Length: 156
Ligand code: FAD
Ligand code: NAD
Image (cartoon, rainbow, N blue to C red; front, top):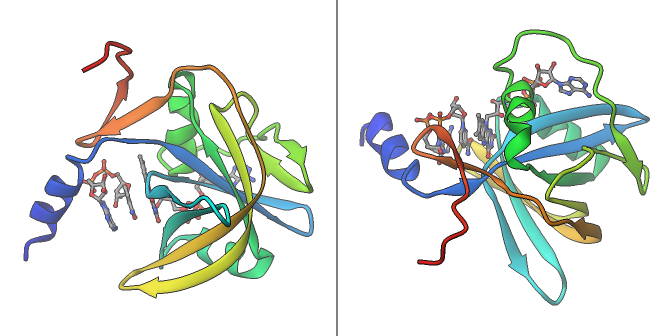
């Protein structure tokens, strides 16, 4: 099957956008990810999918924890930056919660310990047990068919 056909079809699934963050001995790392889902209520589990080539893969394996920062519509720049699409070094002013670096002003912040890791093809699925979370009223950044979108609050 053609890669492009796969990407085109998968891109038809509208998602939010997250930046996954972690830290090893106080050294932070962040990466943009749309492959995020809620998994279980009891215990409270979420899942992120990290590609084999991402530096984040080794970082989460080493730290055993990660944070999911769900982006607001004002954080498109953060999404592009943490996807390596803005070629400049930035000094990110992370907020620290539970010894984890998180982005300020996200729609939601979810801090997890790795509960299970499953290799699946060229990605690793990290299931995280939620240790801390907060959310706020803000409009989310959306991603659909390879483009960033804004949320229309009208009910279907
Ligand atoms: P790097 O390429 O090493 O880092 C990304 C950028 O962030 C670099 O510019 C780096 O300098 C900067 N950076 C990182 N940490 C810090 C820090 N502490 N302080 C300052 N700057 C820092 N890939 C997946 O595997 N799964 C997905 O679900 C996924 N979803 C995506 C969704 C979207 C909308 C986009 C645009 C990309 C997605 N990607 C996904 C691709 C992924 O974001 C990129 O391939 C990413 O560059 C790989 O991350 P990395 O860990 O190798 O980070
Ligand atoms: P795209 O056409 O490459 O991707 C469209 C859709 O295909 C994505 O929204 C995602 O659902 C899926 N996809 C893309 N690359 C994938 C991969 N390596 N593994 C599994 N699913 C994948 O264009 P785009 O949406 O503009 O993406 C921009 C960049 O971000 C690309 O380099 C893409 O590979 C990467 N990305 C990776 C993932 C992922 O690894 N799960 C998800 C989204 C985007």
